[in-house]
Image 1: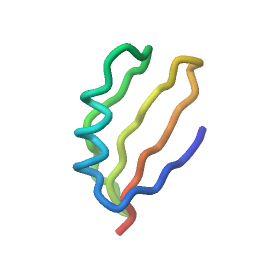
Image 2: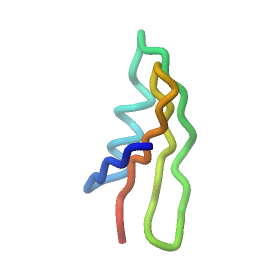
Image 3: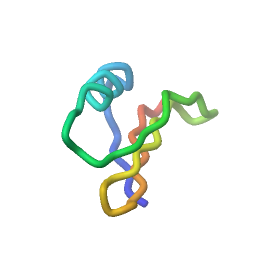
Length: 54
């Protein structure tokens, strides 16, 4: 598992959702007590947590 912290989760989601030609899977933005997160699975099966912390 890897974590990438971003300043704007909405912009990160827009960028991820517009990626073409990559073998990835992702879920929508989820609200957690500590901030917002997008779960993203890469082509090797690795799990990324793209997060915007509160």
